[in-house]
Image (cartoon, rainbow, N blue to C red; front, side, top):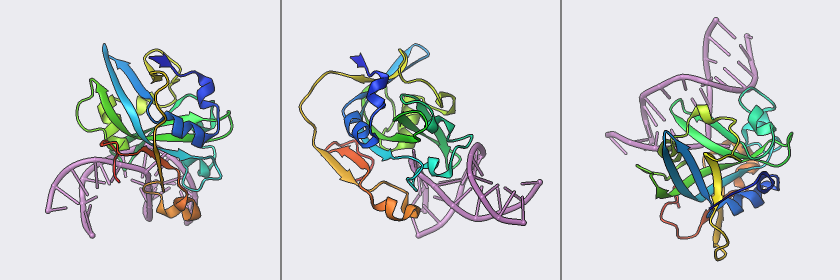
Amino acid sequence: MEILPRSFFDRETTTVAKELLGKYLVHRIGGVERIGKIVEVEAYLGDHDRASHSSRGHTKRTKIMFGPPGHAYVYMIYGMHFCMNVVTEREGHASAVLLRALEPVRNLEGRTKGPGLLCKAMHIDGNMNGRDLVSDDFHIGSAGVGEEPVIVKRPRIGVEYAGTWARRLLRFYLKGNPFISRA
DNA sequence: TGCACGATGAAC
DNA sequence: TTCATCGTGCAC
């Protein structure tokens, strides 16, 4: 398995989002290596995207999104769950890809369908915010070229407040995969 | 300093 | 459909 380089993330966000499908999220902590295949993601395009946290501007919470690509943006939602994003595009362009569901591959216990459950199963919490994903113990891995996946495009979940941005087809998942958070 | 509200998940 | 639960952003 090959660690994806920073150049992978330094590209247009929807391209990165679609190409993350079928890749592997790897997290090694406390001597345990956990691996899950990414099967569902959402793209958040930048501070012009009304559904994106970065649309509020450069704040303490969103500063990671404004930073260089290839880093983890992890935030707490509803006071009890964590969600993980991968920061994309050049520094200053506040875009990211939310990881929504994983197919368990190695050492994953519990469910992985949904951004909060995914983080729990991978032992990802607020301490991981800002971590560089181009690293040995926390990264996205590629198992090499496989056959071209069939990708389904849908509106993003839980962003109804975002006006026309709520209708954009920026949620992507692998067609037919049983670990999608919801059809 | 106070307050409304989530890029959710689970229970009912 | 309702609710748990708290950090963030913005109003005052």
